[in-house]
Amino acid sequence: MMQTALTPRPALAPASCAAHPELAALIARHCPEDGVFPTPVPRLTFFRMSSPNAPACSVVKSVFASAAQGAKRIALADETYVYDAKHYLITSVGLPLIGQVIAASPEKPYLSLVLDLDPLKISELMLRMPPAFPSVAGTPRGLGVGVLTPGLQDAVLRLARLVESPEHIPVLAPLIEQEVLYFLLGGDQGRRLRDVAIKGSQAHRVSRAIHWVNENFKRPMAIDELAAAVTMSKASLHLHFKALTSMSPLQYQKTLRLQEARRLMLVDLLDAATASHRVGYESPSQFNREYRRLFGAPPHRDMAQIR
Image 1: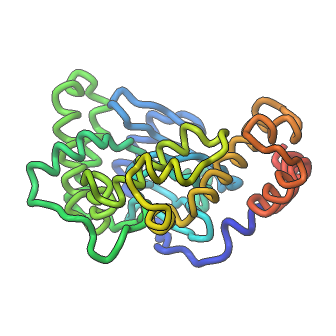
Image 2: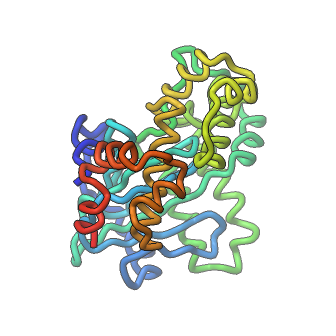
């Protein structure tokens, strides 16, 4: 299932399956069972999973993610990334990803946290740091895995600790969040966030195009209009969009449509024909072909396997 999305390339970071004991214990206290648990700290979420799971699709916006225990694999088109307690993952733009917990057990469940990144806070912080310029090597990918440095790890732990001291959240959470962003911007993956935040840069223009596609993926796409809206030529938009997302704008839109159709069939129990029409497909046969290419099975078989 989903072989095409998960097997073409080796992972871009190894999973050491190490653990951060204090952070893992803290997350475990606030995740009594498997699932997703919002916290009182703004934009901070905890996760727990007691066994490896099936690959799951989602559109992930700009986030910082780190596993206190266990490991997770993320697929972007034909690229595969792994993060664990020694590594973190960041995304700088909205991306259609396939995620799968690959190291977890009832005794040592996968425990992680995700912090949604606020573009405005990143831009404000960059004004107080040394001037940043767009990458000379071209637009970097909108997703990367980096090594957790002691400074970043300490800031993340202190942010998570606030969950158990809610009276301190209003004052301390913004300060510690700024510290996390500071270490991210100055770290080995910081250019991914900096390029998107620099107004007028190619990455910033593409991020606006990505936002438009995410909001309008069910509508027919006019590349000429999209390029004009973000003040880029069609050739430049295609080049930098693919650099940032690993997909062309049309491929990106198609992935969003297929993921949403899959969700509609799984959650809303729609049949394939209705789901495909709901997300903008006019041809059921084309939908079936593209669905099978992405997920490794036609819609009816894929749903049966999941259920």
